[in-house]
Image (cartoon, rainbow, N blue to C red; front, side, top):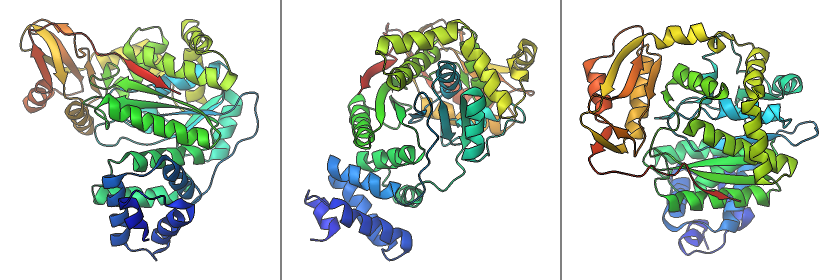
Length: 420
């Protein structure tokens, strides 16, 4: 039976058939039309867990796999499915490294309504993200962590298939998402992986049920490959932190490392704690205690300074006067139209507007309100920062991202569940 017909009939495919169609597409012996039909069949009829694991293996074997020299504790990494005001990597990397767990992450740039970790890191003037894995390992030798842009051709099958999925509207499929994410993570060489799977209006997986299914599938594939893995389902009905936009998100992360309490802090500690517990084989409670202690003692803040310096970056953003100068450049506010409670925030639209504001030369914005927040009329929901005033059109567009009701609402949970 033809492989596409097998998908449609719910029949197992096996690694040989999967390798034949994936590798055939890469080599040009399988046409774009046939591969599109295959992807559409998976979107419509699904793929078994076993075949999803095998598809991940086939994609992984299409390119190079990294490996690192042995250390006291295994290398760790984390992955987020994307959100607004999410600068957790800038907090998690130094927490984990200061607790003795080596951390090397290859990150991407901004995509759609989400900010990219590499763009944020480049807000530290001079910081080098384009370096080889060997050079990054040297940074880990010195300070315990490095975050770099992907420089090697890891998982070329994913690159080719993702491009086709984007062109043919076959992106939203749990087996295809899981095999895409996990193949890249397996290729990157880490032994401990914690996934942050977002759910809500600003997430790719809007429903908790969908996010839970994706998280379970990805953790299953990682564990099938012998990795220590877990996933957290976290809320994206509201921006995670307060800063939105590169510089503002970096400032937000530094302020958390300096002691600011926020949802951004709480999620970062939870993820870092899980990484530490898996790497050191501790209880979840002890892992979180170590992570929280790294923040409270200031060792994580000191570690981020070391990481930035080791990658050639300026430390000026750690200085209060530098941040005060940026925060003094207020370019407008978006006030609440009425007294009440924030019922909904269009996080996708908000993130896209922040990207547009940055592109026009703005530093970014801060968003203090979350879903469920009580606000009074004229209360600033958003503050913008730039050398020039924000346009009336920008302020109006941002205002439309918020829906306020008189009905009292409970805040959404930050973490819905942990998948192990």
